[in-house]
Length: 329
Image: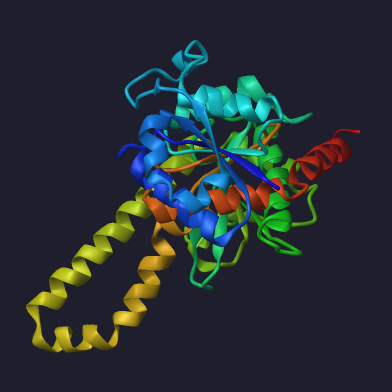
């Protein structure tokens, strides 16, 4: 049975939403939850009938959001250190954390190590598109500065994730740029274009709008641009929702129409909510690490755990290593 290590204390709202998410996940899927944290605070939250599926790893120290990411390497009694260590020691198949994302990335990279041939791990996230599916974007924050070879490796990792986890048999990969033409982009992206062209799945440059129109399955960029893209899209989605609500209240006709459109709005909200995806996998490390939003609610944690289970049950890391090997021979 898959064993998932969960940082039970790392989120912005303490252990309650995290443990509730674990409980909801246990009701739907079979796995063993390794809850890392203060058992005195965690154990009373778990129903008696589910205790057989839970193990407690004692850790009372928490890496806070204001702490430095590298400080986590010294804090061996912290929840995130112990959670990552469970994966390193093969006592867990994956780790899920809604805690300090920088600390999680640093610990995962240095304690678990990188996959063979991978220079930089990348954070991948799913963005909703107009096809009703999703577009995988990476990197969205792990690497502010990238070389062309890093972007090429991101493309290999993104393609593997799309095939092995998302079930896309022939995913299309786009390199995020300021125009579709091969001549567009900066020097790094132009060089990356030539490298990624080695992949049969490469669809050429992708403009920003293609992240959301479903024309490509995977979009590649550096972490600086990717994080701005992610935060901007979240902000736009929130702003549009507020504008619609404000306008509806001003018009009786709009109020009547909103009743009819309730299902549409509900579907839209579901598509743009990070709760539906739960977390972002850190691709390129020797293990499975899912990084969740600090403000994750129970639903987000549940879905992050499902992501971890699917990842742990796949052969994605061996696929990535083999593909990297194929292109470096």
